[in-house]
Image (cartoon, rainbow, N blue to C red):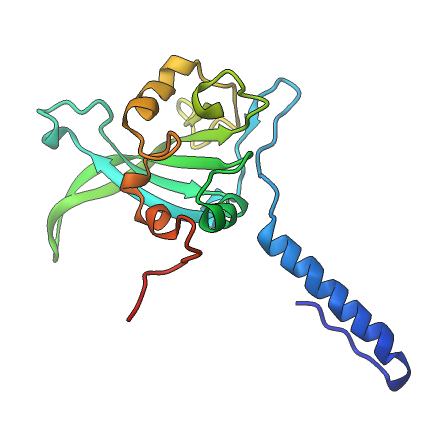
Length: 204
C-alpha cells in the first residue's frame, strides 16, 4: 500500500502523486507480465512462486479405474499465471506468454471419515505449457511443452527444461482438449470465468 502524507502547501503535488500511484497500481493488476524466462541455453526456468498463482483445476487417473494400468497413474494440480488469468477472464483467450504449470503427484489410496478415496502423495515432477506465437510458431496452437522431474536420489527438482518434442505432449492436447489445447472441460475455474470476469461461483 502506498501512503503519502501531505501538508497544506503540498496538496496539489500530493493529489498528482496519488493519481499516479492509482494508475500504476491499476496497470500492475491488469497487465502482469508473463513469468516465462529462458536461460542462455534456451531452457525455460521453473518459476519458484507458482503455488501463489491461480489454481485452476485438479484431477486424478488411478490404475484401479483403468483396468489396472493407467497411462498416467497420478494426481495433478494445475496453476495458471496471474496475468494470463486476468486476460482470460476478460477476453476468454490465452494470451501470448500464458504459462500453465502442472504439479504431478503420486496417487495414494486412503480411508477417512468421508470414506475411501485417493489422496496426493509425493510430488514427482512439474510440467508446463507456454503459449508464444513467435517462439513456437510451428507448434500446434503455438504451445511449447516442458517438464521438471525430481532428481534421482534427491529432494531437489530440475530447475530448467528444454522444450519437449511436439509428439511427446501435444497429441493428447490436440485430440482431447476443449479450448485452445487446454483441458478446460476439467477446469471449472476456467470455464466459469471465461470472458465473464468471475472470480467466484455465481450467487443468488
